[in-house]
Image 1: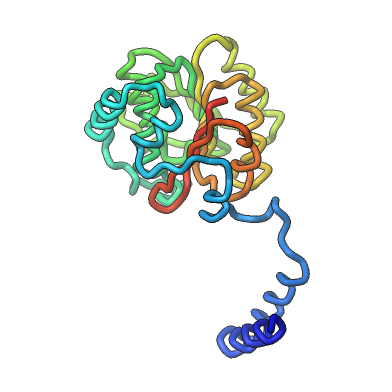
Image 2: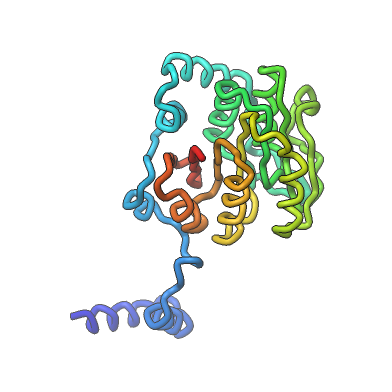
Length: 257
């Protein structure tokens, strides 16, 4: 029965896509991709330890169940008013598809207002859509600093001019060594509340390395965009309070460290 099914699929592929597609299908059956090359599907997430949220309010409450729900809703409403829709902004080096989704922007603004972090570090600046959300929250708090890191210089076209004072851009060479040095230089006080956002190299190793840096440098909260790009987020967050949500065209996740 199994041979008949495979033969049927090969015939269909040959008719529709030609011999190269047939060979690709056969090689996939013989040599399966390793876990480190796989994307993370919605099925993988459902079968894992993570909690699934349906909206920003639920996302925040699952992370921090002791928060006052009415206050969380009020701050989310504040975020919707304060944050302009900048998802379609693009520049020469950064297409709009690299921008953070609207729900992620609302979440990080709200968490900034609720948790009042003194330090936020993000990898992957691009057009500055997430940077603007962080900085808007910091401005409302009237304290704190965002260090945003990328391998390419950016003009932050998505950032409101009034938020610039709360942001420092750092250009990295992309190596683990350089990123570790940057982390140590900005995180010199482990007593202050701090948040780390990964939104750069979305390979398994790129994601896992950032997560490890966040943990080793004693960040209190880790947030990651595009967690569906690899299995790294599921593997890293075992036995931790982890929440995931679908945000437009990708999955976002957060974990209390």
